[in-house]
Structure formats: structure tokens, C-alpha cells
Image (cartoon, rainbow, N blue to C red; front, side, top):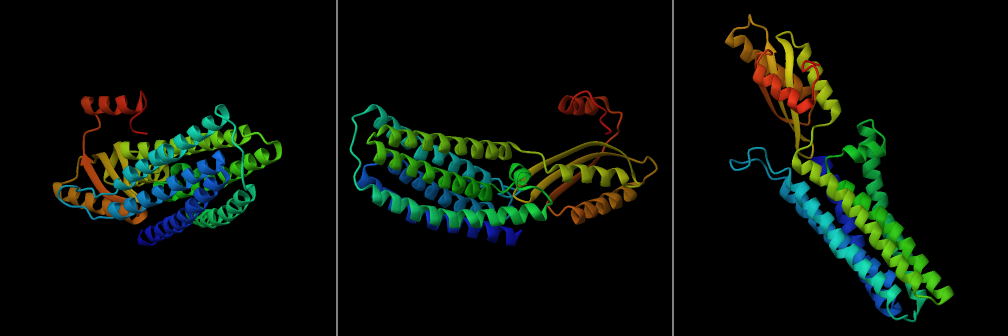
Amino acid sequence: MAEEKSESTLTVLVALGANLVIAILKLIAGLITGSAAMLAEAAHSVADTITEALLLTALRRSSRPADRAHPFGYGKERYFWSLIAAVSIFVSGAVFAFYEGFRTIFGEQEEQTSPLIGYIVLGLAFLLEGTSWLRAVKQVRAEAAAEGRSVGRYLRLIDDPTVKTVFFEDSAALVGIALAFGGIALHDVTGSAVWDGLASVLIGVLLAGVAYLLGRTNLGLLIGRQADVKIVRGARELLGAAPEVEVVVDLLTMVTGTDQVLLCARLDFAEDLTSTDLELACVRISAELRERFTDLDEIFLEPVPRSDPELRARVMARYGDVDQNR
């Protein structure tokens, strides 16, 4: 876990440094050329820089150990600050890009000056963003391979929003640079600022889409998402195979932080077990679960009768009219 945190921190720091330099270059170029697309890209990079600062805050605050006030730790703070980062991308980047785009399209036509400066800055920005993007891709591929998943599936199921945020925003940055380049070039060739404004609007759409995807991911994690299906199925199989357990009545899991999972299991134990046998069985089963699934942070095993009508009703209400023993 410490190694993965170090990898995430390095990925965020690389992105922060690249975006800060790029934001300054784009702002200068935007003021010189008067390009709406370039100014929109400057806002894009400013939003990305703010995002990286928020992600560093998320990494630092979420790593605090559990205490009396927060017995399950502070892992979900990473999701909160990452959600704020997604909001920042929309407010700081998308809204400004829309404003610049519509102002250019429907306002007075402005002459573009020194487009060559814009081309050079966008070329440098592409190289810097590409460096940060390659760093994020390397980490994503390595972690996906370690879990035996495709990159796409890994990104859908990942519980570390910092890596996903950097990957998505860097990918969006490269697309945004291409859009800005196209807008400036078409304005330069045709003399019409509409192309420049259209590029700015498209950059706004791009940023709004990224903000939505990241916001939805962090919302699900903040609400309390179920653990990886591999953990859920594996834990159910392990519990069902225990000689002392007759039926796994209910199994609840929740992601409480990056690489942290809470597991609660309601089990119908064999009737001939003594209280000592039951205690020893719970200790052994918990140890086996932790050994097999290292993400399990807290484990609660509750002995219950499978025939309890109230419990059965709660389980059926949660999962539907299915056999609760499956």
C-alpha cells in the first residue's frame, strides 16, 4: 500500500509541475494571439493545476490512521477531495471555455495576431502533457496487469481516484491541445474567428465530460460502493467452505478507502458448536480472509439463524426475490 501511495504521489507531482508550466505558457500565448481557444486551454491547464493540488491534499489527508472519532480511518477523504477536483475542472475550465467560445462566435470578430507563437506553445505543451500522460499510463497499465484486468475494466473498478483523475485529465489535455491547434490554424487560414470560438466550445464540452465522469466515480465511492466482485465471491466461497459454517446468510462489503474494505458476514453456524468453538472458528476464519484478501481492513462475523424472518426480509429487500443462500 505504501508503494502504491508513493507511485500515486509521484504521478500527481509530475502532472502538477507540467500543468503549472503549461498554464503560464498558454496564458501568455493567449494574451498575445488573442485566441479564444488558447485562453480556454490556459484555463484548462489552470484547472488541472488546481486539481493536482487538491489530489495531493487527498493523498496526504486520507493516509491518516484511524482514531476514536473516525474508527474506520480517513480513507474516504481521498474521494471527497477528488470530487472537489472534478468540480474544479468544470468551474475553472469548462465554464471559462464556454464563455470564451460563445463570446468569440457571437461577438465582434477579432483579428488573430502572431499565430506562430500559439503553434510553438501548443507544441511545447503537447510534449510536457505527453510526459505526464505517459507516467499515468505506465502506472495504470502496471496496476491493471497486477490485477489481471484490461486497462478499461481496471479504470472502471479502481478505488484510487488520484490515478484515474490524472489519467483522464492528461488525456483530455492532449485532445484539448489538438482542438486548440486546429482552431488557431483554421482561423489563420480562413480569417474567421468562428473556428477559434468553436474550438473553445469543444474544449468546454471535453472538460465538462471529464468532470462528469470523475464526479460520478467519486460519488459512488463516497456513498459506499461494494468491494471488488473478486473479493465478494472469494469471501463467500471461503466462508461457505468453513466446516463450522452451514449457511452464509448475508455478506456485506464496502470500500472505506483505497485498498481498504469493510466486510460484514452473517453466518448460520453448526448447532453443536460450543461458545469456545464459535470464538475460535471466528478468529480462524478472519485470519484466513485477511491472508487471502489483503484489502480487507475490518471483518465482522455475526452468528445468526438462517430462518429468522425479519433478517430474511431485510436481505430480500436489498437483493430482490432470490435465494439468500446463494
